[in-house]
Image 1: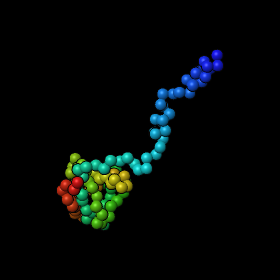
Image 2: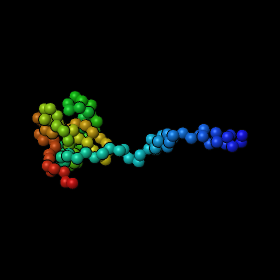
Image 3: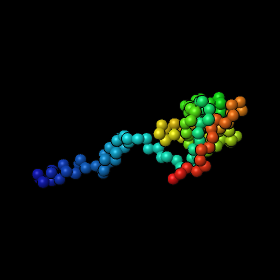
Image 4: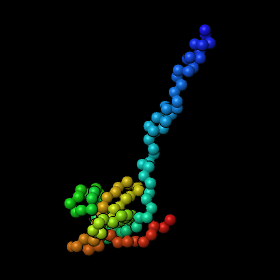
Length: 117
């Protein structure tokens, strides 16, 4: 009778590897797992400060700025071709930047056509 009891005790706590999966999910990754996008075009900021906006519109909320001489990597272009989407892998910032302003002129200029691998 004792042997049967022992076997039952051994069987009960065994759960199909669910806990280990849970533990993995909980462990915080040291860095946001944001993959750096390929195919961006490097631009230099040509104006004292250029806003980064949530949407490609001057009325959209500002989510950041880049200042004269800084570099930004720009991706897709807005429908009206006046804005480009920026992503900064260091800070995780993303938003839209205006390329040319009717009163001010060029806000950003292309530094290189293709990003060097």
